[in-house]
Amino acid sequence: MTRYLSISALAVAATIALAGCGSNDNPSTAPSPGTDASSTAGPNQNASEQHNDVDVMFAQMMIPHHRQAVEMSEIVLAKDSISPEVSALATRIKDAQAPEIETMTGWLDSWGEQAEMSGSMEGHDMGGSSDMQGMMTEDQVAELKAAEGEAAAKIFLTSMTAHHNGAVEMAQDEIEDGQYPDAIALAETIMESQQAEIEEMEALLADL
Image (cartoon, rainbow, N blue to C red):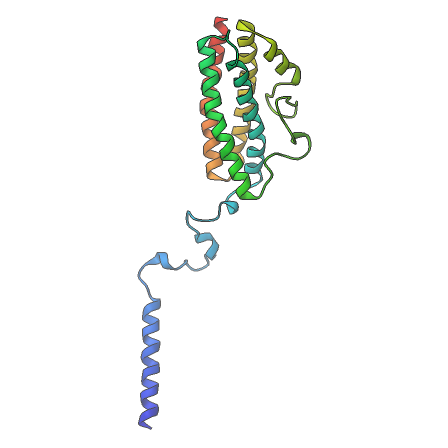
């Protein structure tokens, strides 16, 4: 009988100890009533769970858009007859947008998405398409390649202004409807930097 009482006492003590462990004063160790465990995920939450279709489209469209801007800049920088101001602008555009292409490509890879949209956007290159906002057509690209001096600068500035306006529109869509924080932040950067460059190009055009 004494043995049974000892076992029962130990069981009661263990129960009290466990209850004490469960009543932690730190509210962060357990979700509040009615809170789903997944909603308490911290900053290490998988990136693939933090994006939506707008983020995917933003990256898929902006990559070829940026790629053409880089190539337009390279065409101009290969010419000897371009003014230092236009060359400096082309260099800044190339240096800013090339790394952004890599960043957005990395997002799509982590999301398990293709680097470019299927259909009319697939294989988008320097030729451009009317489906992409501000993109140069094949004829416009050929004209830029053939031009020299002030004529080349004018084509570049005019085309890049339209190109930037298209990027600003796409960035605005991402800011309004996107979900992935880094994509929204990049869209805000694109809007600010490219709007400033639009104003700069308009001033350069006025002096030609």
